[in-house]
Image (tube, rainbow, N blue to C red; front, side, top):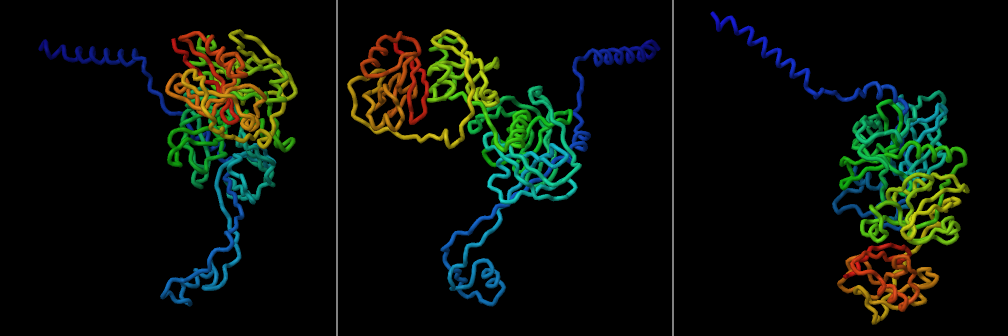
Length: 482
């Protein structure tokens, strides 16, 4: 009787303890965000874009020869003649055909302005925009900008649905985002993921600090919108990183502020202006930071100041490290071009630099970025002259020949590396054909001066060496043996 009467009390005690543990637990179950209202509210303003381009078959191809035994009046013979001409006759004239590509876009104004990627419409003879209600329009190209991969179209329609633009600067890494587009031509496909990183700079894109996400993006998504969870457009899906051509977990979107700056300029004046400083820069590595006595690698190292540039007029020098621009920190070299590109033209900017270990501020009047053709440079390779007797750090050096100096557009000074043996120079990455222009803050104008500078270097420290390779200057860290 005693045992029987205590069993309900024991059960109630166990149940009470279990409930206390559940209430006290710090872990709370959280569900996924609700995507349905966002998709229903915004899908109508996302469009499918297809382009066509007339191409020509090469002339002079040989006449068609039907396989032996194939009757000329048979169905196969008739089919082949329709496409390739008559058997045994002369080659048919070149025939045009359409090369079609697919992409996405979205409507930003009720009177028909549409935004997409430059690469979606590049080279197109005709651009077709298809709306969610299956209406189609032949679009007018208002303008495009290959440097940011943004294009603006216009269709003849009124009272169109539009999207709300958001603030990509307020995005946080780990935040949910959603894409709507037409991957592989499947209209209005929806994919979701999170922001993986911000301010990502890709090698081929100097003026866009991309938003990196893990949202599934595939061919056909290009030009479509990237939404935050408030239903606001925070980016334009532009690129993927892939070794197969398909999605592999890395996709990149153009921040909406960058895109709309381009859109507004294309609508207002038909072209895009960008700020220009006029320097060739490179990353500050850990070894180079040590040579500058910097606590950590940061900033953009000036490898060359272009002639007749705003930087030259302001007194910027090769070897300066740009730390901030108009109050915006430059954490790495790739961050500087988009910051400068958005700066007002013909207006002064405050540039904080490190020169010879000392911080200082330089005021630069920003110019307008020249065209790609004006900035294009040829890369010439240096000949292999005879070896010299002077061999610091395993380098064979000699005076720069006049022909090479003219080809590399070198005003004066410098010594030519004719051979690199095993040693500190080889480990630093210096190659035969490089022209050494500076060591630390010393200009190298002759072999004699080079020897004086090298002999004065403190042993066991890292020195920075500026070399001209082709027409691109590069700073390299060189370990001086003890």
